Length: 212
Image 1 (tube, helix red, strand yellow):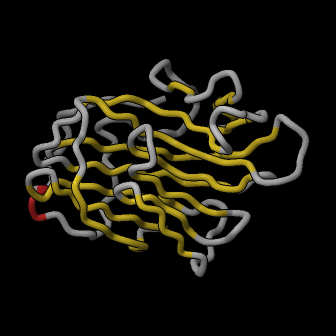
Image 2 (image 1 turned 90 degrees about the horizontal axis):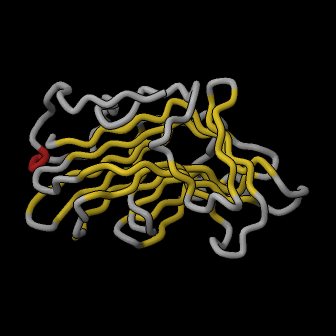
């Protein structure tokens, strides 16, 4: 189960944002360990996806979904103050026999995502809506993925992507945050198997949203 505590310890000012790894302190949600799912978790496609806590991990059992393409998502909603924002999401991800990708997301669209590409190899991510792949990074089941985003000035932000606390990619760009945004987990199903299939497993999901 998760905890909420917006009065967490202060961090450095977001206007001096850098891409050094920082662990999320869980002021928005966490630390996990997925012993139960509270009502704050919402499935993007509830008719096709079943997310449940099992042995301390989150798993997704999916059936064929013509509406979502190939992806499944479970999210929470948080209030956002974009001025001086610092946001950190991280989780361990695990491969299943029919997993294509497993990762973490910020916003309901394709703005910011980070995922292990089990069937194609390497890391994939979206930064400010642009897709990038890093096929030469050898992902393994149990790897920790981390996304850090912070405000630099105006509508400008820096996004930093990490695997096992090592920087994979950084990008700067403009983004207009809504008053509330969604964050959570995402997965896709690879070829083969009989529906439903387990296409995503996560553990130790944690999120910091603050100023800073």
